[in-house]
Image: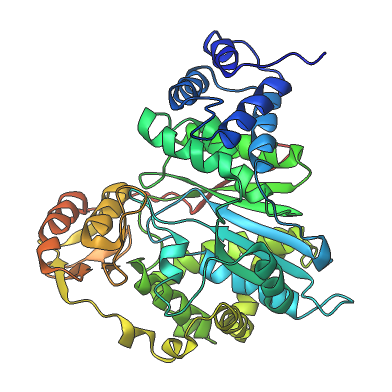
Length: 464
């Protein structure tokens, strides 16, 4: 006779520091997803208590793997088998100006389109399920939805069809994909448990593994703009995600990357699309804007690992070189146009993306004295972008398509008095003052250049 598992017992066991069984975790997630207003199998209070218990006691590798798997299969999942292709994706833990997905998806799509399989389907497919901005970090879906008509809400059947045609798709989470995560995430936000690396890992990996991936490359940020406050905490999160991905049978690699300043030239929504389109259209290195160099470097590093894992390059370094060659060849831009058009987006805007930057108010901050741009709190820069209207403080808040900032200098750059440092854009003049004050407070100019950290800090793989 099967013993009934009560949610209260599960949370009490974890509260007392006990190791939960697979059956306990599976039963708890089942109760969360299958409760109804008429039949409360588990209450919000009990879920909140469980989250706090995990926050304090953590999870061992088996508990974490079981929780992630239970969440992954709590609703519908994507079946990539009909593609007969290598499925790969990337995930970033979130950052300011982080728009690498808009470059990486078309780079990998171009590589897959160049060598279709026996069924005529791209040999590499990227089912990129992305999220929205929250807090100081941007969201890929908000950027994509500034393209008129672009449909991010594809059904799983339409996701499959888009991948068959394009090799990549950029979509949002369906209502029935990993519903357990949606419930847990909402309560984590209200219970002070968002920062738990174990809960972050289960949240991220359950959604990514629901894509039915052969490989996953993770961009785990560290530095002042990162979600995790210290290098050690960022590394722990990277190790947990690699461990969890590998346990599920998905090749998983994490790159610990420095995030002490916004990535690239622009931070916002449409302006980030504009920056990526400029990069995709550039066919010579000298045509690239110098302030986009770090964005291009990081995109090539991540895409390089993805191409390597997909068997298109012998090493990650060779993959990064191939990635840049694909960018400069124009093939990635063609793949981008194909994806956007297939997802009903208006590609005519890409002939002159600058003309579609429809802000109504702007202000430029200039340097008060000469020196070097020495430091900034990148998280505060992200909050300034959010205050301009480009981000949201809580899920469901509206975002402005054209608010954001343009950086005119990078850390370590020599600065002259009166030189522009950053330009603010908004669709509401009244929103400029607070972000201006925040940016003035955090952009520091010093008499000598700072010691800069490398963009790539460490690579976490299965054997590390």
